[in-house]
Image (tube, rainbow, N blue to C red; front, side, top):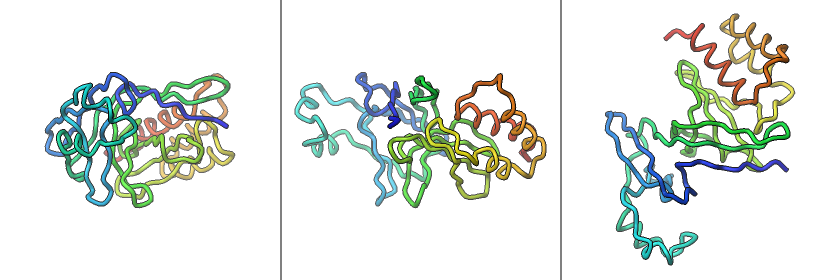
Amino acid sequence: MKKLTLIIFLFLFSNSFSQSIIITKKGDSIKYINGFEHINQRKKQFFYYTEMPSKQELKPKLYGIGMGKLNKKYGKTIAIEQIDKILSPGVLQNTGKNKFVNIPVEVVKIIKIKNRYTSVYALTEGEFTLYLCPNCGNNEYLRYYVKRDGENLKKIDANGTVLAANFWKKLKKEFSDCQKTVEYISTLKKDKSKKYETHEYLIDIVDFYNNNCSAK
């Protein structure tokens, strides 16, 4: 079974408890300490710490036991609707074609997937935005989504780094309003010299559309 290994240098399980930055829709910046953040689905809020608890305070709090007092002391919240994005650069490491594949990530967005607020990575943005969700697939596979401005979120048929049988066909249908992109997808499929991983194919295709066919 393929397993997803998360090596996000600025994310939940970083030993250094590095910082990420919330960028609000008003343009304000809020730095927070990684390792304590979570989404409150009922209140539609993002919970975070801006200060690091002392080692003495953290010592008996392993595995989340007894975190209530710390949360009251250090915890802060912001409404999800006020967040534009979160800057949290790092690397996802996933099993690929007989090797590990490093996927650089930086921009986190909080979007709704199946009526739940979910943190995803925006790999490239434009009229079409490509999202990568490390916790949305079965068996810890990565899951990719695309969203066109004004339209619903759509799942890409690619689990982890495995291209589904109808991957190319569905991509052509998704970008069928731009013949240039359809032809480019056909070229990528036939080009054996480009040994892309799934995320590289998807970024390439979405960027090609946004650069050549977007109304923006």
